[in-house]
Length: 195
Figure 1 (cartoon, one colour):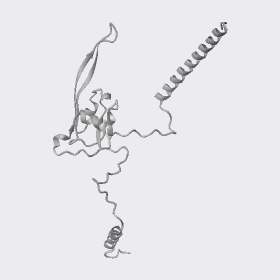
Figure 2: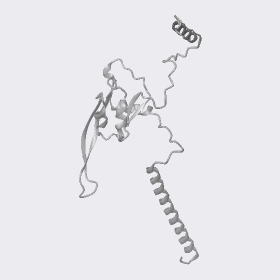
Figure 3: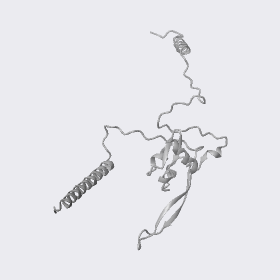
């Protein structure tokens, strides 16, 4: 059966009329803050203590918006006859958010968990040059990073934690055995005999 002329227009007007009679759900943004998902992508925070200046984030960034400068420091040997150790020291870590496309590759490739997503998104500036956040500013964003989600209670325990727990239980059992033996020796000494 051929369609009735104007039926598409009638359907469209019906949708419009239905929508007009419903209550609006517009959020008045500056007055009412939006409810963001817990791990939403806003700005990137830097946990400087974990950064080893491996440069993986800067190399993998498709926009080349991460700038890292460093120098090497040599520390004396820990023991006589040992060799000197050298390590990279971070001088500058900056992210240009006017170039960043928020893909998250830098966060994923960081092997030492030095970069994190923060849900903060209100960092607009009047000058584009101020969108380059240096390490001090990136460190400030770390305070806004939410805690990671809790582990699934039914999930298998990670191997590392299981091994650490096993070692701790073994050490606790060893100490308990030593304490029992010490108590038995003390009791024997009090009675004047030897075990």
